[in-house]
Every structure is written in structure tokens, then in C-alpha cells.
Image 1 (cartoon, rainbow, N blue to C red):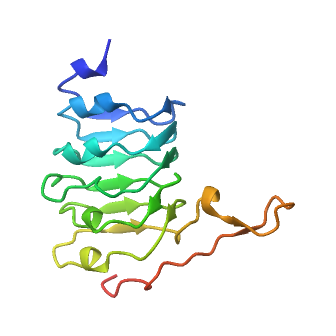
Image 2: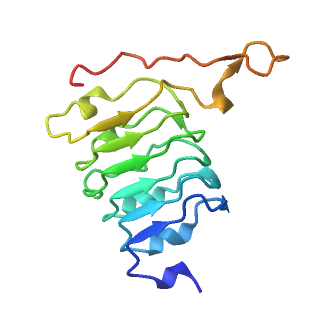
Length: 173
């Protein structure tokens, strides 16, 4: 049995199943998927770029894994017109938050707490007149334990965890 044969599968909810390894490439062959929830597993590696080609995807939930890399090239505003929920909290993602993410025409919720993001927010995309963004959940940048700076290596709870966002809160918020 293989998921590849389930061409009419609409929702894939595999959260909290202790799944490990990398996110399966076979997901790209499920053209009818509207919602993918792989949260709270043990996935490692980068988020596959094939997600940007999933044109009817409405929800992508990858929180609570051990994913690395950045979000660049993962989103396609002209092709992913239904994508409204992106949840990548509690991973080890790096880089800046790309404008393409916030250019998604239906994006209502983005949650990216406890990662290793850097830089500022793409204000022009977040504050564009046509934005439908309702929920933006961030807790500062570089808040994941893997990217915190240890102050006193001999003590178990000595970290610098305050890395504020550059530029402040967008005026449109």
C-alpha cells in the first residue's frame, strides 16, 4: 500500500505519530491535498520545495519537528492562491521571513515561534492593502534552543534568548 495511489486524498493528518526522517517526497504526487498536518513528529532536514507546486493546498502544518533550512523558494503567490495557514513553529528554521510567504493572497495565519529566523519582517508584504492576514505569531527571532547563545556553559539554564525583531511592529498592525 502506498499513499501515491490515493489521488483523491484531501486531508493528510499524521501529526504526533513519531514519524522520522525527511518529509516524504511522495507527497508531491498527491494533487488533491488541501491540508497537510505533519506536526509534532521527528522530521529532520529541510522543507521540500515541491510544496510551492501544490496549487490547491490550503493548510501546511509542520510545527514541532526538527526541520532546518530556510523558507526561501517555498511559497508561490501566483500558484498557491488557497494557502491560508502556515504553521512552522518549534523547528530550527533559519534565514529571513520571505516576502513571498506574506504575498500569498489567502494567507490568514502564520505561526513561526521558536525558530532561528533573522532580520526584519517584510513590512510591504504584510501591510499590503489586499492582505487578509489575521494572525501572525512570532516570539522574536533566534528563540529556538538550538540557536540560543550559552552564557555560562557549566549551567544548564544560562541562555541569551532576547533577539528582537529589527524594525519593530508594522504600522498596519
